[in-house]
Image (cartoon, rainbow, N blue to C red; front, side, top):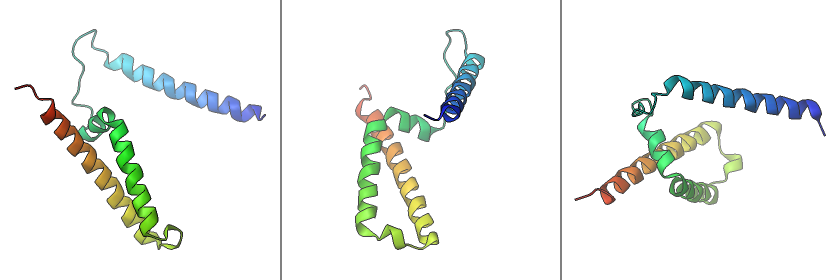
Amino acid sequence: TNLPFVLWVMAHNAAFLFVLWFVYVITDTNGQERITAACPPILHALNRNVLLTFLIANVLTGAVNLSLDTLNVADSTALGIILVYVLLVSFLALAIERGMRQFYKKP
């Protein structure tokens, strides 16, 4: 095994977890309602609908791979495809979130 690499990865992950814990401790409101305005709506939508968004993104990836010769596409075209792909998945995640809110809205 490659011990320096393993130690580096462990140290990196521990530092990342420490930063997350530190932010959690700083933003802790002692049992009161947490601040929700800091979370962008797209992240909230993605967090609440992870599986469905993942499945839609996989279907879109398959559609792109079947419709284009992705290995021989120009760089500008590839960047355009990625931009449209990210915008479409983000929009669908937001639409799913809005639809779920309407579906589960109590009368």
